[in-house]
Image 1 (tube, rainbow, N blue to C red):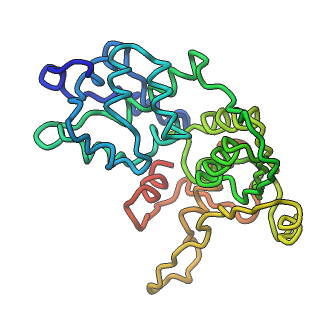
Image 2 (cartoon, rainbow, N blue to C red; image 1 turned 60 degrees about the vertical axis):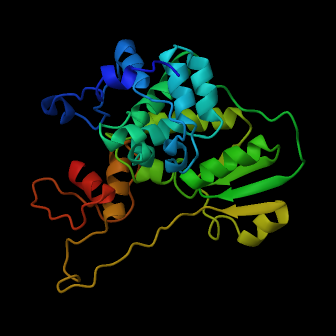
Length: 300
């Protein structure tokens, strides 16, 4: 345990955010990073509970007290190794996960919970800066070929795990670039696309092949995949939106959130946009739905 009395001495403190007048100048992330001193203090708040409910609160099963202890002691490579044993993409979850681990944090019963998500993000960013993140090439080869259809978070995670197991993995993506929802559904101010591309480059160096602009069923026949590969994993995601059958739904100017967000993300990255432009500049807009997707639309 890093510091037994840390939770008594330090309060929860999140990183600073750029002023609003700076944020509106671009679509970049606006949450800054901790200083090394602040990061040390935040990791010191972990109580190393006898029963760490944060473990079960995390869908991935991250062993949070262990990496908090390594962070407090400045053992960055150890912290990265602990985190990467359970999490393929901490640079994504450290930015966009709703952090159920923090809801499960015992300290949160009577004080603000440990800032686990931010600590996670800092571990991976420091790992990249120090060169700890390297291509993960398997020492064994099964000789099996696996096709992964879809390169969103599920497809990427599956590809990474299959590659670790020694299989030869090819990922098929219908869009111009890999990333799926990470690239086309989440705005840059929450997850910059350079972060997504950085991980995909590591995966390529690990031996995973990406075939973009390739839609299964259109550019390549599904039967051919079955013939060519020993296994096919479908990770196409949920691309059919849920409609809202209310009066006036048929009127013009009503769009699905993901259609809008995909165009906006493509526009920010200077990618080609097909179909009707969905633009809101100079218009009064009503967003129905106040979850993450709705807030992403508002922020965009």
